[in-house]
Image 1 (spheres, rainbow, N blue to C red):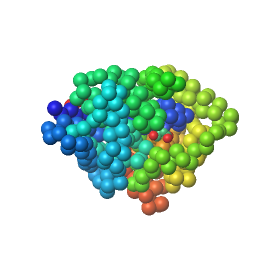
Image 2 (image 1 turned 60 degrees about the vertical axis):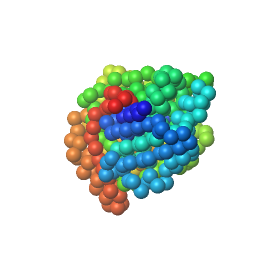
Image 3 (image 1 turned 120 degrees about the vertical axis):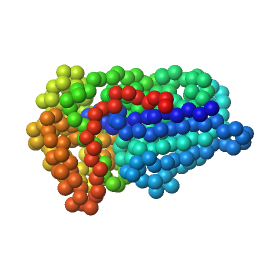
Image 4 (image 1 turned 45 degrees about the vertical axis):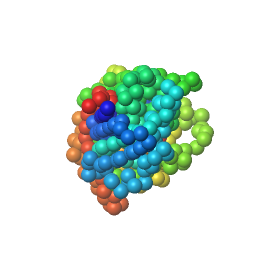
Length: 311
Ligand code: HSE
């Protein structure tokens, strides 16, 4: 038996929603798991680039054994029903650029879990899949939209379960993703964050996240422009993303730009706009990054409302 799952990319944090807000994007990985016939063949993992922006060289540094995230996720699922995974061929066809803050690891984890779950006869429900995916990924903000699609506010409760709510993204707000040609591993981007933050910064993010939810629910562009700010992660990651400050400053006072934020842990930058010439956004970002010898792939897209699906 062979099962394929197509999983969307995602952008997380969206300004003040550190580790809890995420949005699915129309870029996809397809994960296929096949039961191999011969006993004792173990697990085989193959990664293939399906888009020129996915650097195949990167695959050489990604574990393809029991240390891989997809293996860990599948193993947790099998163990939850008292089994061990074996005799599986896992193929990942990847369009999501790796280590750019676009949820590539979340997509692989989610695709692996959903495909393995189907092979096993669906022992895990959505709650269990969300919990295992979050356990492997470390936070729910990418895995939740990868599974559910759309714009999702999620939280890992003390008992490990994931609670979430979906918010309706206003269609008139454009999403532009600027993907530089350098990578930033999430563990490095998290290692620069402090263990504790000043109370004022925590309050700042709480207020802005509340404003953001209200802005989305009422399609209030002015409120969204005030809301898309952060003091919990971006300032610490600035030193890891050359050009980030210049790009954010370039758009800070532009009418029609609602916000310019780090996509997930970076280094990609997410720009949200309303009635603004997206070609102008592209020209400004390209100019700043290219003067620093950084090539950039810039795409304006809609939100992906559908989550992971079987092919
Ligand atoms: N919320 C996460 C972070 C997203 O910013 O580290 C990256 O996976």
